[in-house]
Amino acid sequence: MEVLRPPLIRIGGRVYRKRHIREQPHQHEEEEDFYAGPEDCADEPCDAFVVEETERGYQCAVDIPSPLYKYIIGKKGETKKKIETETRTSIIIPKPGVEGEIVITGQHRNGIISARTRIDVLVESFRKKQPFTHFLSFALNQLAIQEKFLQFKEEVLEKCSNDYGVSSSLFQNPAKLHLTIGTLVLLNEQEIQKAQELLQRCKEDFVDSIAGGKPLTVEVAGVEYMNDDPAMMDVLYAKVHMKDGSNKLQLIADRLTDRFVTSGLMMKEWDQVKLHATVMNTIFRKDPSAEEQSNRSAGKFFKERESFDGRNILKLFENFCFGEVQLNSVYLSQRFSTDSSGYYATSGQLNFS
Image 1 (spheres, rainbow, N blue to C red):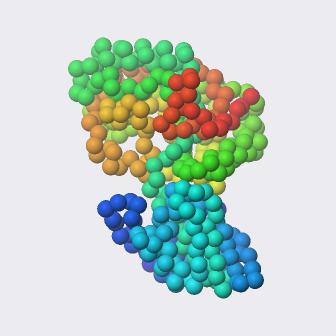
Image 2: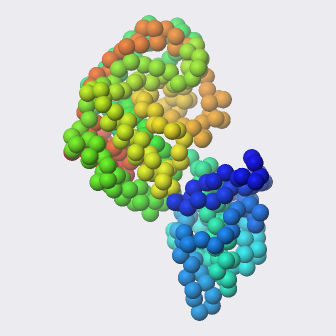
Image 3: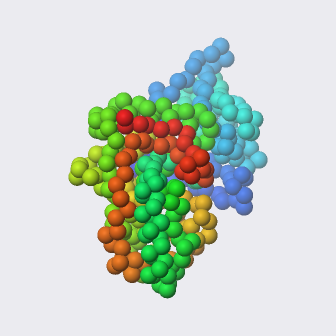
């Protein structure tokens, strides 16, 4: 990293200069001690958050999900004590598991701003390490698509089961066929509510004008793979495109992602959403209920995968047609869940018509 030109990071709509942060790993995550000291973050006064004047000085309140309290407290309370000492503030944190505001108080406004900035950087850094809890998706589990998918599975196993690594355990649950738009870490009901409200604002701001108040007719046809070597595949997916040849589906996905990234609810991982419907995935080999990992958390898991030889599958099923589908909703789907239809349980949705 260039010392004189540190990169900028966006946290909840605010921009900070990011400088080198040293993390001291511990045996248990709960005991992790992470501290951004005075040299580690920008402490300049800013008006991005509210600092109130009180009879005893100043205070600032911040909503942080309870699962992240431990990172502000640190091992044996060391992180919290260090921030308080060096910024001359007092940090009041709700009891573990109790949702509420963290309140920073002190005699000097600059000290409050410095403590708040450091807490924001801490929270954002550790939020990135949390497994995603929800994702925005288009459901592709309509009955006709499921039937064609099961036909695809049957024919692949009939013609390619002797190929290295190919087995029935690799196939997606047909009731959970979907397109992932982006993943989210939502750690309490307030964050879920915020995501629901943002989804509805997106409908009003741009989705209605793009979709024209009508479902999108999409064709699911052809297969492609993720990695570089077709003889060592981890993910095989079905391709999708708008029946009318337009880019409406891609445009909606990209603009939703941009809006959720700007809000701080989603991390930006790609310049453009890669719309794909996973049909075979090596993570299903060990856990049929697993979902595809986001880019930031997949590294370790990919190393543990047993790949498969998909060259014959590509050759024989390159243009396999799974059918057409009318997409009428974007779902805020819950990871590791199932509703009455067999799809993921929904925390919210945006309808086109």
